[in-house]
Amino acid sequence: MHTGTTPDAPAPRAARRLGVPRWLGARRWLAAVQLLAAVRPLPRPHRRPAPARPSRPDQLRALVAVLNEAVAAQTPADEAVAGCGEPGPVSRGTARDCGQQSIALHRLRARLQDLGTTDPDLVAAQARAARLLSYDL
Image (cartoon, rainbow, N blue to C red; front, side):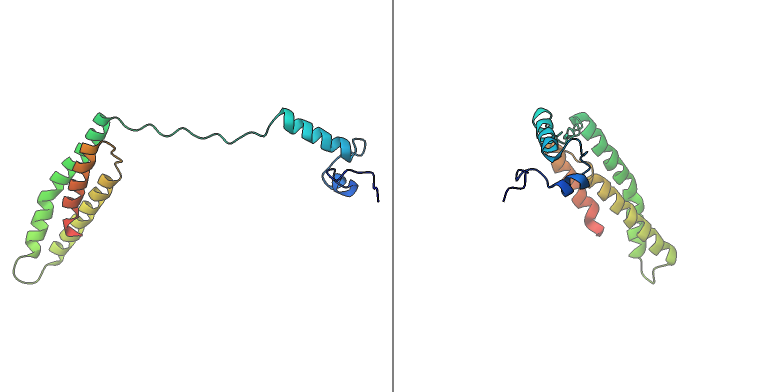
């Protein structure tokens, strides 16, 4: 049975639901949409460029900054560990110092791992420093 519409064209009710004006008609609307799609393709999502990697000197500066902080934190950490090793019960202050130093070393290790170094020499130094900082974990 012939209904007057092509199989590709939306039915008259569907055309009205889609907002096709009556004066345009379903066939003309479909042809206009197809023509518009052929002339102006749909925009494709743009990929954002990859963030620029820091240069080797910048990576080295960041690594040295974290390592300097680790060296500065080493003396208080050693003192706290020595306080825990003294004979007798551990005082609250010594336990608090040990906890604070553990937190400080953990944060330094996390910062060290988040540096994102790419140079092989710096990656090796970063891994060694991370192992040294994680001795208390």
